[in-house]
Image 1: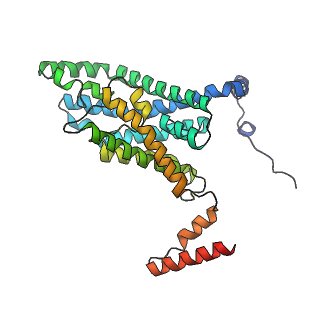
Image 2: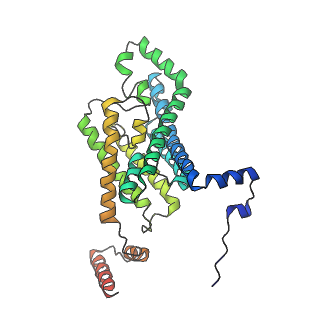
Image 3: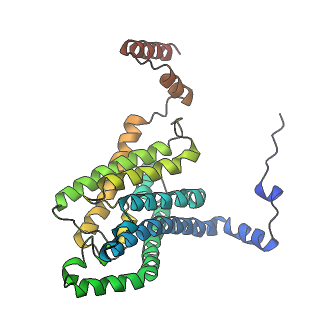
Length: 311
């Protein structure tokens, strides 16, 4: 039986010779790792740049007594669209981790190479740091005005290093009467939920999440957590905290909490929700034979078990 011909992009979209030459060099095994690391760097840059820009607008507008220029809703959407951009633009090149906790989970559960993972984590943190520098440069004039406004009001020392001060654009600070224990709880549960969502999106046997939908599901899961728990305080990405200056013990706590929460969430999904022994057809069959009544559900489940046993 003859194999079907393989059509490549170069067959229908001719590219200049110098670009083809760069492609040949880039796709060599000894060089391609640089393209992957750049993709991780750029993806985290998109994520942090979009979300932090919305945060900066909220902080400086509140100090200027113009509170309607941004909101928690906008911040959630900013991070969500940043994640969408990261995944759809950079995910095909690197695999789309964009979070040290996700990379570590791949190393533990998917045999992702250790040193490749370390490179990913370094460039993820670097992407967050560069995004912070760019946002700072773009908002420098507004930050200076905010500092002057706070100084004139005699509240600079009181507000500067808080969630409502200019430093709150780049780092996380406790909002009274929040405590570090509750910050840990909020961060752990939020990251646990996100871990399950992410692993469900990359589960090839999960027929209810087609690959084109995965970026949007992950992005709006992040947005939902920010909308729901932005006030108690969430970080959700180790690179976001380590790669941005300041924050102190809060940043350290949230950055380190992401990793065990992600590992636990992935472990739960891998051991309870994911089944590599069943076909996708059976997942679909189980869903569409579900009856609105308990009796119908029991009959469908009994039939499925008997049918499976007889195979």
